[in-house]
Image 1 (spheres, rainbow, N blue to C red):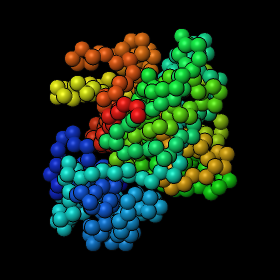
Image 2 (cartoon, one colour; image 1 turned 60 degrees about the horizontal axis):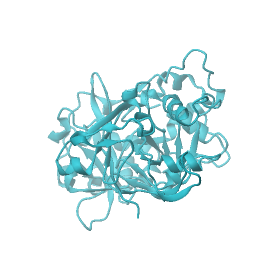
Image 3 (cartoon, rainbow, N blue to C red; image 1 turned 90 degrees about the horizontal axis):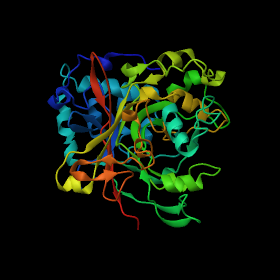
Length: 434
């Protein structure tokens, strides 16, 4: 795992004043990367968020040397993949060069010419995703959802032995801000004799942490748990939209399919694994009596520092709330510290059968529910499958998501002595089914 270095120095400040503001998501200790267009009709290219600005990375290449310059040149592309493909040495060299050039101490004033206000830019999909897998790594979410469908046996016997997951659909992953169309599918409520086909009646969100693979693995080979973290480039927020009524009917016996594949929303910035190094923590403490991970999923360093403290929040803003200019309502707050399985365990398990990892693969944590109801990270859990609706400002109620609702995710890592590291928003408005 990445050790701390000068780029993590909490005293380092940027010559870009907004990066030093308290509560700012993108201080100089963060430097997340994404893909943006500075103006209508402009070609997409890689940018770095700093304060309320985006640095045009390929345009600023003359400010860098050596490997860092090579990484900056790779930013002249409509996705992060060419830059990511250069590997960890290049990622780290670029981060160090950016940290120095943007610092108040060194202040490379040439960079000012290559800044665009975030509010004036269009943010695109950051990574061209090759493959998508979504895990089920919160034991609290697994127990809650299991109880909803299997009251007598909520947690299946395999759960505490392996990180359960499903293979998703990469073609329907979209960046924050892209509307989501309500899906159609087969539904069969208990009170109906036969299934029918139509718009999902129980549309839900799932508040997740996602991560991008940066180092591929060989076809047929495994990834040792102690090396798994080295394959991760960066992290994002992820909404694994779910049609719960379609899911309940189709997931017998093979699991999620059309209930999930219609849309997945990701935040536009990739927060690098290196930026999150100060927020590493011990892995989730398994309760006494739980089985220990099998050897291929067990590593002393991962037990000591494989956890990650990222706070995750979900908000809702109905169409009526937006018309009335009412602030989005916070409906849950949780933490990735609640994950029963670490990201390294997920990645090692993904490759444990010899299935090769590819640069740009996206892996989701699964719904990051915690132990208390206030930290449950889907409406399925929060509303008891719709039976206990949430009250919204203005008198509206929600058991599941309705057309016109906007779901907004926010995430950040913070601890005493370090600037807060933000992820930007992951948001989408739900449109009616066609």
